[in-house]
Image (cartoon, rainbow, N blue to C red; front, side, top):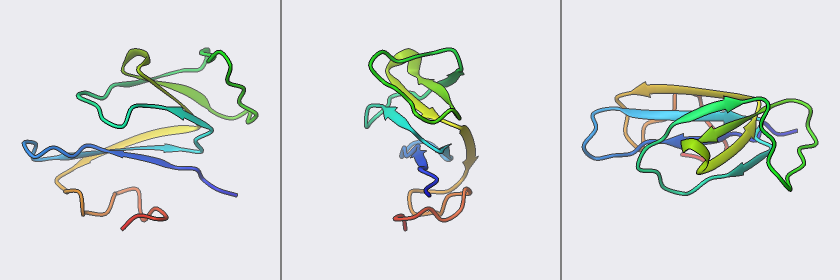
Length: 97
């Protein structure tokens, strides 16, 4: 069993804060590797053509008006004054320092 977590982290040199966005129980994702901005909203009615999700749990999270898509059960975020080396508020995640 796996929690299939996806942690996205804002890392900019000119911002005094960092934002971590955690998606839990990820079944599918299609997202770019870099974002100039990041906006996400959930859409429980959305279906992606050609993608069948076997898990009855979860919902679609639409990133930047359709630039990306993530199917997961939860999306949480947290803003703090950390940097790229500061552990996430969401706790230690496997395969991260």
